[in-house]
Length: 192
Image (cartoon, rainbow, N blue to C red; front, side, top):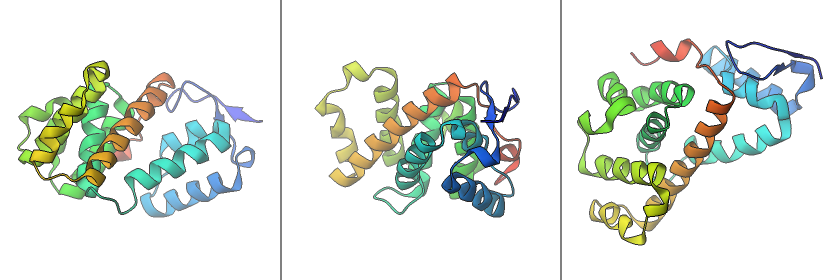
């Protein structure tokens, strides 16, 4: 495998295009077409191409497809979890997505640092509080913690999707942090 070290992207060497599976190359090409760039996470994790594709398929299903929560709610959870975990890559990249879905750059920036200072609905605040508890003190989570989510109108499908998104971002934050992934500069100006 030919690879190139690029500490401005990741702590691990980056695979060459010819060394990744065809599905990864298609994702890179599609990203360049849609976003105008290839997210660093798509390159850094592609070092192990098959594992990356498995991660991407589940991530894409949870975050980018029509689901039980809105796109803005899923991105809200991503930013809260990423901010709590101090995952720079995910807080910045999903902060850009939250700005896009809400058309509100102020709230997205506040959520990344302290969601309690953002002007959130009761439903959004309940989701954030649950994400915070599950992220910071998972051993203390009990079935009773679902009560506030139900009280703001979330059904079981929405609750399960919230739990899955929170879990995905806790895992993804660990990967991004461990690999010292740096956000693409393009994220900083998106939806501003």
